Image (cartoon, rainbow over all chains, first blue to last red; front, side, top):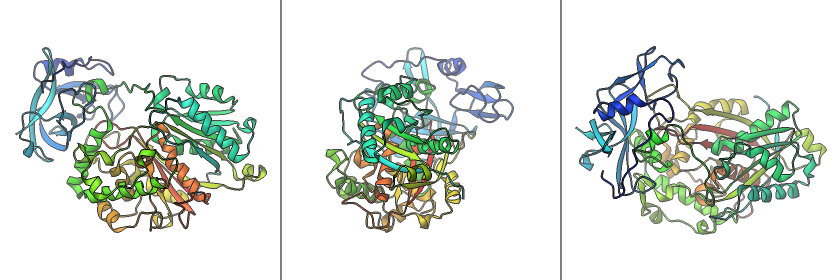
Length: 137
Length: 388
C-alpha cells in the first residue's frame, strides 16, 4: 500500500468526536461506536444512536473478525489514490453485526471473494496513523 | 387514489455539453427563456419557483434567491430542491403541494448545473475520515461493491447491462440534445470490451459529468385551461424515501428505497406495472436501471438480467426504456440530470419526440436517485407516474 506520493492522514473529530477510533487504531485495536441502549455497534460514527436517537453511546473494541459482504477492485485513480490502484476495496461485515468499508491487504486476489473470512490488518497511512484494513484468513 | 391536482404544462431543455464554460445561471436562463417562449406565459405570471441545488454552485446557500434575481422573478413560493437527482420530480411534487395550498398559480421547476465546467461542492461530513481513506471517493467504487453483491445473490449477466447501454445509446442517436460524442451506436462487443473501472463495473455502465439545464411549468388543470395551455400531462402520483433502512447496520443492499415506495406509488395512481407505457428511470449506472425494473414489478426480484435479455426495451418495444438516451447516453448535466428523463417523458406525451416517438405515450414512470451513501445503494429514491 505504499504510494509514490506521501498520503495525508485524515483529521480526527471532523464530523463527530472520533478520537477513540484513531487512538485505538494507533494501538492496533479496532474501536467502534456502541449503542448502550440496544447493545449494538454502528459505523461510521454518528452524533446519536441510529437505533434509538439517544446519545447513550460509548466506544468499544471489536474482534476484528468478519466476512467480505461485497468487494471490488478499483482501477481508476483519484485524489489521494496516486500509486494505490488497482486497489482491493470491500464492505466487511464484522462478527459484531456492523459493516466497514476497508481495503483488503496482503491477500491472494483469487481468495478475495464474497463470504471469505477476514481478520483485521492495518494500513499504515503515515508514521503515527493506522487505518483498519483486512486480510483473508 | 390521491389526486395531486397538478399538471406539467410545458418543458424545455438545453443541449448537453461537456465543459461548456458556462455557469448554471446562464444555462438556467436559456432553459427559462425557452419555457416562456414555448408556453407563451409572461414572466410576471410566474409566481412559484423550485430550483435544483447544483454541484457547480453548491457553495452558495442562497442559490435559490440568487436564481430569482438572475431571472428577474418575484416568487410567492420558493423552494431549493436539494435532493440531487430527485430534485426535478421532487420539485414538481413540492410545487403540486404549493399549488394545492394556493401559494402560487404557475410554478417553474428549474434545474441547471455545470459540474464539468466548475465543481464547487464539498460533501464534508464523515467522508474524509471514513470513506476517502479506503479509496471510495467517487460513486464507481460504491457501485462496484453493489454490483458484486447483486451478482453474488442473484447472478448478474454482463450482456443484460450491455443491452441497457446499447438500447439507450440507440435512442441518444435520435436525440439532438444529447452530447455529440454519444450520438453513435454501441455494439455488445464495444460494451464487453470497455474498460473495467471497479469490477464488475465497466466504463460504459457509467454516466459522464456534463453541463446543461431543463425547466418545467407546473400548474393546476384549471389555471392551465384559463391560460389556454392545451398541452398538459397530469402528475398522477409521487412517492419518495430517503435513507431507506437507515436504522440498520447490516441491510440487504440489493434492496433499494424503490422497493419501499413502488406499491405506494401504484396505489396512489390506481395503476399496476402493466399500465406503464414507458419507463424513464434515473440511470447513473446500468445496475440502477436493472434494480428499478425489479423494484417496480416489471419482473421478479433477482430476475432483472433475464427480463432485460428477453424484453424489447426499444422505442418500438414492449416497455420503451429511457427513450431520449438516458443520462448514460445523453451525458449527465450534474444534478440537473433528474430533469433529463422527466423532460423526455413529457416530450413523448406531448407527441414531440420526432424520430423516437413511441406509439402509445399515455403513461410514464419517471424516477430519481439522490446521493451515494456509505456502503449501501443510494440515499433518496423518488418516483412519479405521469398520465396524459
